Image 1 (cartoon, rainbow over the protein chains, first blue to last red):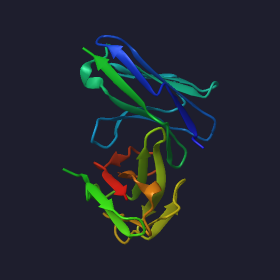
Image 2: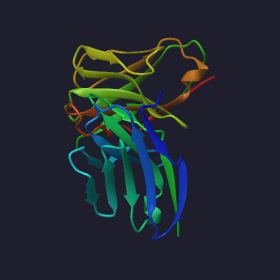
Image 3: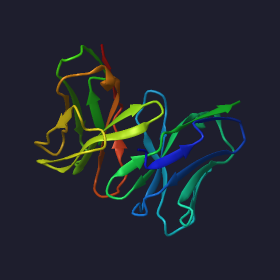
Length: 109
Length: 112
């Protein structure tokens, strides 16, 4: 049973638009929430991560929003670019990582 | 530069055969992990190791085994390959705890 639920499975956004991916979890022992980005034929790579003591973290065009009481967190990609087309995985960690099912993002030029 | 490599990158085998997938990292990381990636399931943990001689089962460990004889390598063995084990396999390493995991390029395994 997947410990981290991720939605949507896929999304298409126009260049310059905003992509939003949502994740939810139940295990309150999770204390680290990374997002990984994966391009076709490659392994996932860490994109951005947050710990539950902050509600938001921004790195460039990528922002994580974290709601501890709701046990939800989301990734926002601002000003989406064609180079952002990839699969994005949320994850949550206690002593190991549990991954969501992934979201394939397609940015149309 | 430090890296993590996997071999082979592609493998086709037959049901019932033993298969070993190699993973080698030069990060000098204590922690190493094996995942399988299947559409709709994301990345699922097969086995992991927190150091030499240490191995642990993940959520989908049935039919797989690992051994850790040195820091750099964690080979994954499929004892008797089954069609349900057709997947893309990723190895990862991390310095410790919840440190960033660095993933290899993956091995695409097909079991006929």
